Amino acid sequence: MHLPPTDPSNTSPSGAANVPALSTTRDWTCPFCPLLCDDLVVNAHDDATLSVPDTDCPRLADALTCYGASDAQCASSIDGQDANLDDALTHAARMLSNARRPLFGALATDVAGARALYTLAAGCGAILDHLHGDAMSAATLALQDRGSFFTTLSEVRSRADLLVFFGCQPSRRYPRFYARTLEGTEGTRDLVFVGCEPDPAASAFAQARVEAILPDADPYHTLAQWSALSVGREPGALPDNGTGTSETLATLAALQARIAAARYTVFVYEPAALPGPHAALLIEALNRIVKTTNLTARAGCLALGGDDGALTVNQTVTWLSGLPLRTHVSKPGRLAGTAPLDHDPYRYRTSRLLAEGEVDALLWVASFGPHAWPASLDPAVPAVVLGHPALAEAARSRGAATVFIPVATPGIDSGGHLFRVDSSVVMPLAAARGAALPSVEAIATQLAARLHAPDARPAVQEQP
Image 1: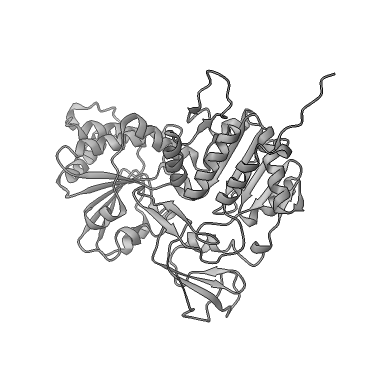
Image 2: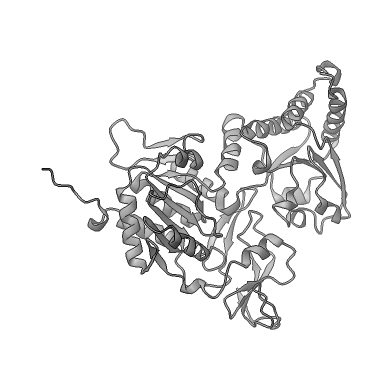
């Protein structure tokens, strides 16, 4: 909903004073983090910049600095030269049609964009992986192997009296986490940080009692011991290796007793903050502790992740194919005996595919910010970039074998839908500005339609 501006003296993120607001959108949903805060007021100014008055989120403020007057005039490009959209689409479709093993990377888009990209992938036999594929795959592996216990932001606000943070400080990546879960609530909350120092932002809330335990402990050793205690092993029955194990066990046993006595415990972790390459084992252990706790009390997990549409795209691809991201979608005319779908979280990792030279084309989708393609991409590999206008110059600089098409950011220049961090709510996005940029859905749909057009097919070489 667009309303008349309430404060004509707003200052735009670019620093220009007294830039009037052309429109104000209330109850706007921010698309730049998976918390999807929907209580914001955003101003669109007549210089095409955007501002959110009194925002307490530096992540949002930084994201808005990437939008300005030049966005609407951003042109497509082919091999470093400006081009009209029709020619760019034709050239991009030819690149994808000629490829034998294309990779669709980054995939920073919304539900509609993901649906259209899946159709395009099925038409050219592409591999699908997200910008945050490592963190997403760790969570997916744990879910596949052991199952997970999820909770929601609403449950945290209304029921949780004990929050256990494992190895993370949420405000570093998600500045409004505590505002979404604690602000305006009553009753004392115990916030226990395990394996890290306390989050400084948590102490700003009067109802929060903050403490940290075992801040320097090895996370794998900690969870192995904690898991044993959670199933009823006595601290004295576990081996003491002489390096402070007995003290660690006593600390964890005391925490487990608090969990058993709590009304509702929420375990909070960030897959991206867990040490690799075996983060899935840590997530499995956390869910094992939660599972055991639920035999006699109530507990759940809240995984903080899914940035840049990662959770949304993973959910959408899973609906459409039955398999999560890091899946290869075969062409309809595949060889006999070839599987139509192949999921492998290791084999289809973007960094590995590029390092081993296993792909011959890249479609890079970055609609939420100017996330550049990996530096390891071979300059000779054709690249189609559906990106934030701020990526235009980098695409032109790459030169040959590169097509760039600027696209709208959902929630800024187009509507859309994203899954919230707790994976239970799909939030609608309203365009705060509305620059004349096509959506990822529109471009992917047109590319799919052109894949098999005569001018997109590889030329047939005459035999001597």
